[in-house]
Length: 307
Image (cartoon, rainbow, N blue to C red; front, side, top):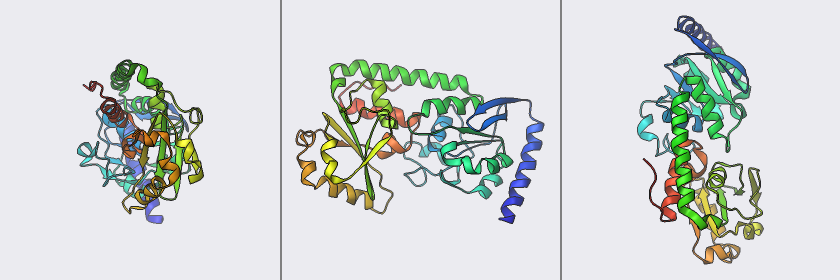
């Protein structure tokens, strides 16, 4: 711990000196207060998965980032852009010593994960913290883009995304009346996902209907097998959070072997479909959102809208 404090203090001194000599600074208001950030930060560290996607989308490759929840160490859809990025642990377990050694001039995190280490992060470099995760990726991306001086680029990315949402919605037409059910299988737990989730938010933006029991502005219901009938919808998308030991895949197979699963009309109709947990849930950012739209276009036989 003493060595960590020394590294943090040294990095802080270096950062303050660099910051003082920069061409300028701006105040950014965030969930933990107001922070002076460099006008054009050159060494950005990001501590959330959706934040990593936000930076990449506005043309910034971080010098350090947290490991993707799935992948080795990055999600497949961002791996090519992250080849030279230092892994700083996981969202909920940051390697502060390694972070400090990178001598960042800006750190981006989120209150739900990093409130307890905010003072330590701020001692290393100016730190900007979003309020929460789940369906808030657009709100967070606006904040992150402001922090790195790329608000115009973020607005352009939002405009392109919103155009895709509108085009997909129009192309779906009456198919949007299908009630979409969302289920996630993990080792030891299964959830029905509601509207305040990454996928639920995007389905709402498109205009899809949801089953009445899932059409709530909440996160998720954790369920037992007796509640499998609540999975019913006109179409069911399920995702499996498999970390490599096979436990989640085994759990999902056990649920799908249950007679209650087979009895679901949506299963009998062949409209229960597995999709990527990475891009429908855990990545949680604008790049994953665009991949999710790709999937919906393919599933419904729509023309591709990605440019």
